[in-house]
Image (cartoon, rainbow, N blue to C red; front, side, top):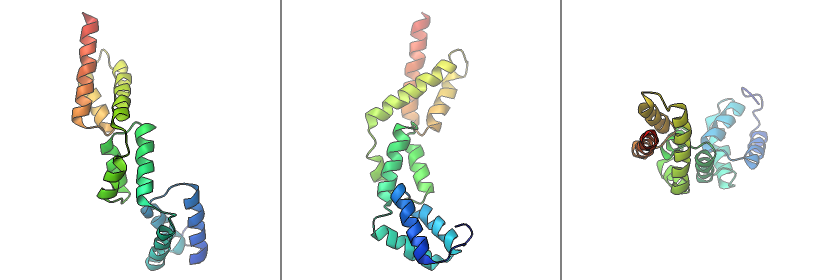
Length: 163
C-alpha cells in the first residue's frame, strides 16, 4: 500500500490492526502509514487512528514504556536520548516522563559503567581520553554529571595502576 494504492478505509483499518497486533506502534507512526495508504485524506486517517486507539491497538504510553525499556536495557541508552527520540515521534512530555519511570536507575548506572569501561580500554593512552569519554557517554544519552563521575573514577583507576 504505497502512495494511496488502496483507498478503502475498511481495508486500511484492517491492515493497521494486523500491523499493531504484531508489535507496538505509536500513534504518529500509524498516522503516517494511514495517510500514505489513503492518499493524504486527513479526516479519514484521524478517524482510523482514533478507532485504533479506542480499540487499544495503539497506546502511546505502552509504546513509550516498551521503547524506553528496550533502548535502556538493550541499546544502553540514557534517559536524555530516549526522551529526545520519543519526543521526535510526537509522544507527549507527560507520557515520556511516565515511561522513563519504568527504567531501573541502578541497572542504567551499571550499563553506563560497562559502556564507559569498554570505551576507556580503547582510549588508554590517548591524551584526549577524558574528553572523548565524556562525549561518548553524553552521546549515549546520559547526563554530564553521570558521565563525569564514571569518567573520573576510571581515570583515577588508571593513575592507581600506573603507580
